[in-house]
Amino acid sequence: MILDEDGKEYEILPDRYDEDGNSIYIWQGREYYSIQVDYYPKGRIVYYGHLYTGVCDGVILFPGTALLPRGFLVIMYGLSLIYLFLGISIISDKFMDAIE
Image (tube, rainbow, N blue to C red; front, side, top):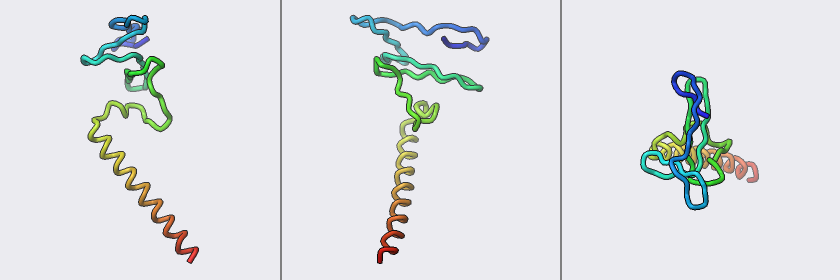
């Protein structure tokens, strides 16, 4: 169930079904096989997934990350990796100094 702007509930119905009876949702011309709605105090996020089992929901992903532009995510993940590897190199350097 999804709440609209007036607070009334309505259900998201599949756009069509495949030959096995699985639901298919269409959004922006693409087909998705699962849907999940997360509610927050300032609104909601509707996730569409390509898996029949459901939308990937992990503890590492922050809400709304999938809505960010892919180029921005690439830059942020790259900077995060550089930051982590820099930290590991500093710590390993300290260990090597302690061994010597």
